[in-house]
Length: 200
Image (cartoon, rainbow, N blue to C red; front, top):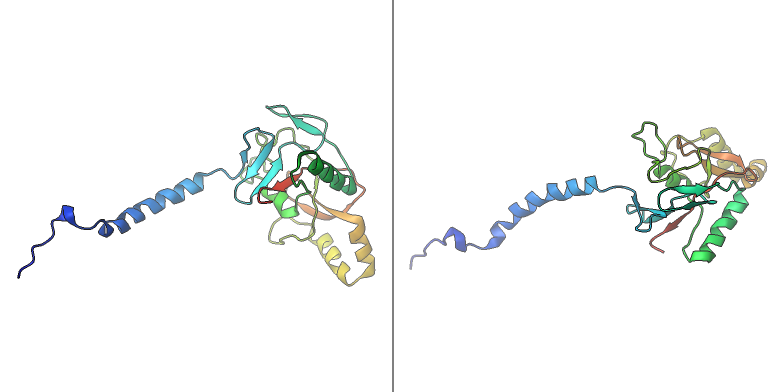
């Protein structure tokens, strides 16, 4: 018994499937590459980072989103007051607002410039001075970081004097340069931009 060849139009589609997949992969990659890293929420008062699952307050504390920009005067507060502001805002609207980590604040900076810093469209009327952060657990590959002071605080694990200094000092990030410092007295009055996790 001789078998007849199967006509091309009757052959199974699985033969063509790998070709279709290969053709779609570059398209998907290019679409992902074009996706914005930070996007405004529908109401505009928060900025979302889909890659980290974080929602940022578009305005620093003390200022308010009016639908077009941030208005009012930024609150400049001590580290303890910054923590209290986060707790009060959490109680007020139910979102788990907190002080951001050093690396989270650094991620907000667009480095393509000019000049580098916060995107003025996403974060209008942002104060230029350093902002409070909540942790010294930072990635030293992120730059720039005040290495001398960071080393001082790390040595606090074995040296009583620097432990006391670490208790008195907090971490800040400069929104223009991205520099993180761990030697800022916690009583210093600085702006604060709060964040909460969409995954909570």
